Image (cartoon, rainbow over the protein chains, first blue to last red):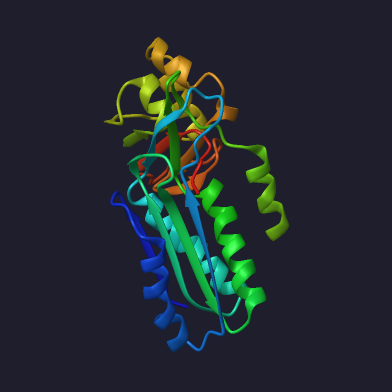
Length: 153
Length: 81
């Protein structure tokens, strides 16, 4: 498994990322690739989301993502893994983050991608702040996100 | 020891990072010390259940020892993804 971890302020193109990931997956002998891309949602009834600002903990973020990727590779026979997460100011509909996994068979690729997402949501030091017409608020962690980790223990 | 604050903890305390001298031996003792400083600290640390702590960039617990630790970070539960 080789993990590509990127934490960046710049926007990214999920299609271009997947295109770049494909030959790496193929070269590793993968027969399946799974990718997930998270987008900034507009929130109905919240006065209209004008901006989302993502804060992170430089240094710890990269370490936490490396650790999550390494744990995934211990559980499933993976080819390359991509974890890409933005920080800074984002506007509606922009891609926030992306994970891609590759493996010989699809079950491992799907499960590893879900595992990465579940851990990334509550174990990587990112914090989202929403700015709407009604003011700003820090997004609260959801107990379902914490509960989601239970299935992997 | 460097103390870092993120998200609303940073906003309530009013700074992202500070260097302090402390004789606290655990995170809980450090929190007690910070609470007594000023109202903004007392407010930020009023409910530890709403906070997480990292020691040298690894998630930890409030009863963890501080021996050898160089960087302590306090922040709310993470909301990545």
